[in-house]
Amino acid sequence: MAKKKKFYVVWKGKRPGIYESWDDCKAQITGVKGAQYKSFSLFDEAKKAFNGNYSDYKGSSKGKKELSPEELLKIGDPNYSSISVDAASSGNPGKVEYRGVDTKTKKVLFKQGPFEQGTNNIGEFLALVHGLAFLKAKKSDRIIYSDSRIAIGWVRKKKCGTKLKKNTKNAVIFDLVERAEAWLKKNRYNTPIVKWETKAWGEIPADYGRK
Image (cartoon, rainbow, N blue to C red; front, side, top):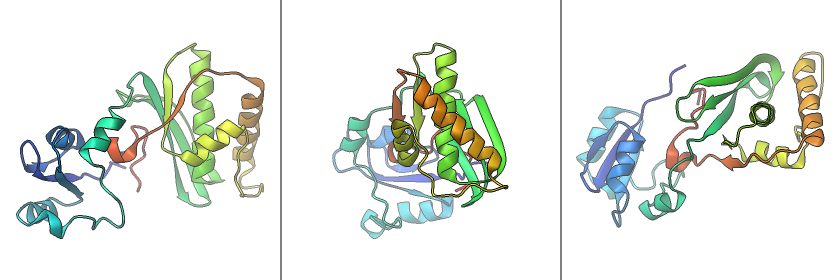
């Protein structure tokens, strides 16, 4: 499924207007004190907003706070010498799959599933461990990105913390979980696991676009 397109309105920036990519929007607001901008799902909404006042739209995105230009500068750009992982589930629990891609090209490097039953967090955990094993096997010094704080925490603890109970439907994915935990306990790795900054960079390159 294709990722939903967004339109970015810049009221105050280097060149006010409506932009069709986050990179273009970011270029207009970076370094501009008090920059005013916001994303919209529909072009008509963006056009209406651009012809209106920023104050009418500020803070109206379901509680999501936009990053300031200063915060964007502090975060910087992603490291493209990396791979990115993500998972997708249809229901929770439900069918689960995961994959790892080259962050720059989005080329799929590995993928697994869909499995009959699991959770998104289990998929994220398995994707991370698969990514670590993949990079170690290739003796790669690339870093790995994930947008799941929960999965990153589980990997650091070397234990999948899911509350889902094992049954006949999820036996296959639980077998993978046990193998992943065993791998973490038996192997050392130097690969940095880094949180993908979604607010600054948009969706992680491995995203399935099902939000």
